[in-house]
Image (tube, rainbow, N blue to C red):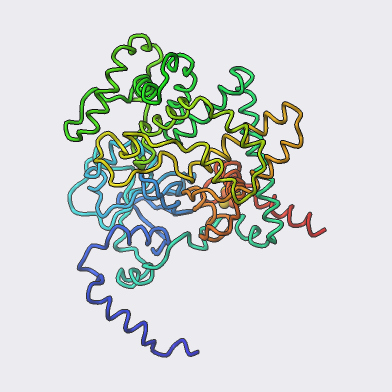
Length: 482
Ligand code: SF4
């Protein structure tokens, strides 16, 4: 094929794009394009100067953030001849965006070390309005912006050159070697979890530790601690509350999440709130010392399905059923084929319809047309691999029941993949060199990869400084070759 001949497809594509595309000098590119330019470092990287005249070297542009906050996390930059620093990078069209978008007051932006903008506009910046350092892109692109737009529009994922130092040796491993490595990592993770459960069980008993871990799992990463606190005081606030609704009213009260005011917009919500207050106003003095301030809860960035009030309703149903733990024990003792593991545990944790929460994401949201389950299969997998299986396994070990331990391990390694998340997405690209989720064959492999991130990536930086994981991979390779 002659690569120099005119390519009709490229010409046609450019013509079509020319109608709406960017032309140099006339328009401001969209922020998404600036992010792609930064991620792929399509800039003249030698001799970069910030707006205040300082030289800067980009040792690593950082990893694009998918969870809000600054656009890039963990960049590594060197200003002048100073020691390289790690920090976040925010991309905006103009320096004024820092103030206009409220970044100056948002604690998530406190680690921003560079504000990358399209151009530095004339208005003088006051110190109060400025992030640490501004880098304008307009005059340092390595190609015209229209060309970059075409070149970067289909680029997704991590550029090859930004992969971790372990990526090349990892890709040289055979599939069984990679499996062995991930299994070794996940065993550490599983045993750590199980040992933490054991340590706590010695103080509070097996049932209580299970409840604490279930509550923590319902808090996800944002609300683990308030959930843990609620579980710790469970013996107090659950006393005398029998129905799921009574327990729910108590839980909403002691959590500090029962709103003081009616919504005045959603009739169903206001009816629910009036009923909940009918219970709580009688109880609240008694439970004052175990009531949490509302401020301990985080709502920012939560998906509606993860709203803690809805999760507390789920916990209330579990508690009201009175037999959740015996059902888990029966599940462990039963013979269950691999294909039915998830569905069979889902059946245990799924609750009958809740008159309010099956129809609402939050107190303020309108009634849904179709009821939504309080717990999806993805969350059941989280409960299985993080709570139920480690709890059953460590109990079996403490009881000297090796056969049961082996069965629980079998279930753990057979568990289907969990829902994808931002840690896994980045780890697949950075370590395994692929964005395909299919490279990981089950929940255990996913957890193994997350353990490697925790053990190595989290102790290093974006340029993999001082990381010894590539050595470990080499050792594994030579060990299996010899
Ligand atoms: S920090 Fe270590 S484990 Fe993480 S990507 Fe770099 S080399 Fe790999």
